Length: 160
Ligand code: HEM
Image (tube, rainbow, N blue to C red; front, side):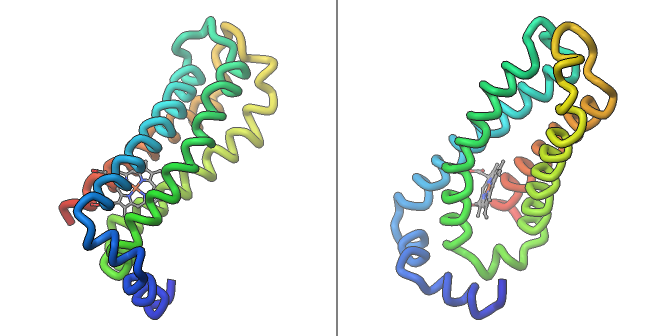
């Protein structure tokens, strides 16, 4: 984002309210936390199934249930994240931990797309009782690591 846009964003009434109102920032942060708890919770439970836990649960049915919640949670996470960002856009845009967090979110998204485009296509062959293919398990492990990284960066933002 160009510097002028960041300065403009920081001067908007919304951004000033996020900084000046004692309740607004914490309320938006609670919404952000509720959203990513559902997002990361459902994604990690799905990943654990792909890694071989609870093999009696059919993978495709679990995906239909959990991944719908993961997608819906983005409606809380992303707008709340943008509002939090709007409170201090210039500081955050230059913060390496914030940049790393965004890069990890992008990597987690690409990893999920690649999982669905490749190993998940053949889910009918391995969704009950059998171990998932190695590629699927690698995507699931990477997914857990990337989301732990995103959460760690998010929490570290308060300290760096
Ligand atoms: C997509 C998944 C995301 C996860 C798992 C996540 C995770 C977190 C965590 C753990 C925190 C710290 C909460 C706390 O300690 O109270 C946080 C805060 C924050 N997040 Fe996110 N976040 C996500 C997306 C985003 C997005 C898309 C943005 C902005 C574009 C964003 C911007 C922020 C900001 C600005 C803070 C506030 C930092 C502070 O007040 O110290 N987040 N996030």
